[in-house]
Image (cartoon, rainbow, N blue to C red):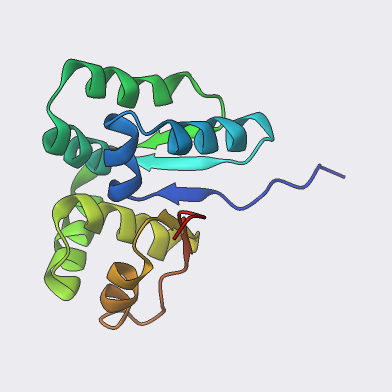
Length: 142
């Protein structure tokens, strides 16, 4: 019998933006998840969106460091079928290409999106057959 493997969390673009900005709490959260064996998926286009938002060498280095974490899988966009599925997701939800890549993976894999803004995903879910599942990270001081 194989050991239980937790359902992966998909890192939303907003989380990746804050990691690129050096948010130590979010970096620590991702490192903590990695340490306990929690699988995570970082969509390549979400990383692209975060890099475009921050545009610093340090930010790009922080995003690149995700590749060093054993529990983080950087998910590429592969082939024409995935590209057209992404275009369909953008058309249906009006999400940016970065967020649509997150949504497309979450929709196909039925994995929760780790985000700072669950409402964004609830609104996008209205255009889909099945709702997107989210785990919202909240500031304990708010």
